[in-house]
Image (tube, rainbow, N blue to C red; front, top):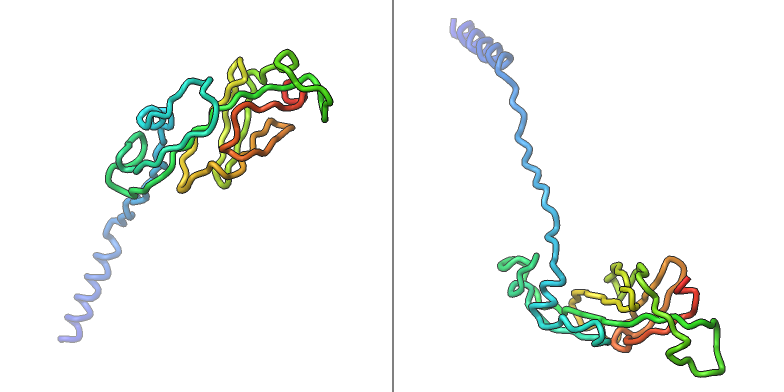
Length: 176
């Protein structure tokens, strides 16, 4: 009799389990995008928004949690360098080595040219203005003044120390 009651109870449990609605686990996946850093606002905040005619390399040390503009105010606080490189890109009307000194009349701005840049593992793209002025903005864990900066078009490139860049004179092919 006890055996019969146990088997009956077990049968009821099994039958009721078979009729229970199946629930799926909720989707707990989190899709978080990396925050967008507002480089121009950080540049203004740090006082590095100089005239396009103020050529050269500038940097300022800052704490990511104190600037905002895409950085968290409480998480992953780090000290970083904000780097600005202003330059003027001009092409000369000749190619190769020339015996005469290149003068202003021999130069033409590399106007509205899309460029790519790279310093160590940092890279980006930008475009010169109608006067050949360009600006590179980067955030780095260490100073980049002595590092090589690569500036390139789709077919040409040049390398120079980031801290030395001001006025760049490149061959005619950059203007074509």
